[in-house]
Image 1 (cartoon, one colour):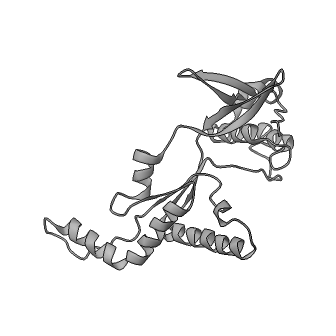
Image 2: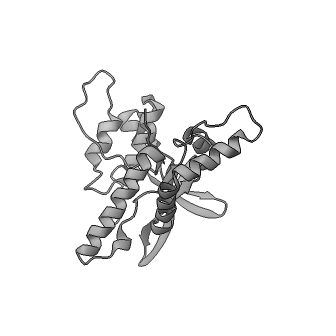
Length: 222
């Protein structure tokens, strides 16, 4: 299905000899003065422009953000599509259990279980399982890590299976760092390119990567 591009925001950007499809907020500036929006809402507005499909993400939802009034009471829902999901082990393990259960259900219904996968890249950082049994010694970290693996062997084996079984799912092993640190130092992206879109011109079809600011949903235990 062609992108509706209801506001004429679609444009091309060449980077490193490769053309990317992007969506410019300036296309809405004259009608809605989107320059006044807080930065977070600009990122959300671009997200809606890029994912507009006329059904899940509509032009009306885009207008809702473009016309945002700080003094108005919220009245509308919008469809937000994160670029990726970040989990730690307390909340991430149940999510993978759910995906595995969905695969079992798909198989029982005669479908293809391999079709059950995260829709966007999901990354799980194991950082909530360490305990301090040994301290004040040179090898304290090493010994605590060994105890951690002994206590959580079955759970870690399950997550390792999940990483090989599901597309769009990666696990950062224990004793690497806390989830926030690992995200900032290793996982975070500024621009996310994770999709292609069909383009059509003069009886010719081709695909083009779609790029935009990265957005993230985090499942965090408090």
